[in-house]
Length: 493
Image (tube, rainbow, N blue to C red; front, top):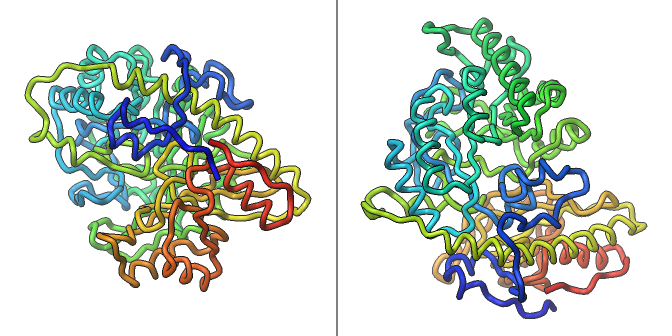
């Protein structure tokens, strides 16, 4: 079993303690250098300095750091067949969805409130609910005001790319060093099936002509960002029968133009959302179809597999959303930013990240050198911090890792309903969780009851709580060793 883990509660409060179980050791580091020793071998120092605390651009960072989106840009210049910005459910994670729109001044007040209460906050993004580059005046005003108050926040923009080339110089001048572009096609004939119209140059275009203009502007914007050293992430929505096979060409094209990451996301298609695709019955891909496509894309542009398709007003770690805690009516009229919690959190987490890196490297090495030649898909219930630290019945998602002779790699996540509510759970919910975990070999959690354990076993999924509070990779290596008879690792604190 792992050694006891010292709680971070005294430093950051009970909520953060629940999100991160961390070994607090003596010492610390200057916040400007925190995490530098955890740099992956395939990332240069300049790039690492930009992504090390960015939960979207670094899979490792998403265990520790949070993002915040402010909904200041409601206007949009592209109609997508998968989008309807009028629909809102507070418990739903879907791009374009917000509970309230903000002015730049309101956004600044909200950012200060979140920064004072969420020490993991490292990134501020504007992702709509329309298009951040089309609604540019509000985007720019928000960033300018936030930077005056909290200058160490990373700034991000998400855009469809149509208006992007007009603002690349200003983005560079404002030190916006992360931009996400949604690119679903490089063939206008396919694009015409996704975008019914665009608004460009004071007029509306339709069909293939609209898709051609959008494609040309997206490629130009990507090339301009790459030339200025601004990191780009490409979001692509996988739409079965429309662009699923075509995304291989998209991946090649964006890699040639300097994209840093390619994030392939599943289409969210529900008639209740009122989108065109939802209303005509266009289905989204299942988890195994998603993984199969992502596997085919390996070797092209580097893939992001930890995306949660966040709302345009999301707050918190990826996989959680605390936005409802920070509605305008709950925020005091006058606020002063207090940097203390965020600075202390960074020093605390820096040592944990170094320990985690050592454990991850050891675990991956042990799995790589195993002679079995087999692989396991493992679902992990975690609250964050890179550990197995969530009860099965409390989990709202399972992070999925693949252990094979290539090492231990994060390959995605499975969103589920919370099973245990008030000490009990419904069979129908457990049935849906079991279905969502299709293809998973082993589930790791900090605790699981007999009933779900038995039902998972009947579906061919083994669940264990033997590795509670271990690092995820250490636990996976131990499971792999037990499964295939290779030498096990000692658990780490």
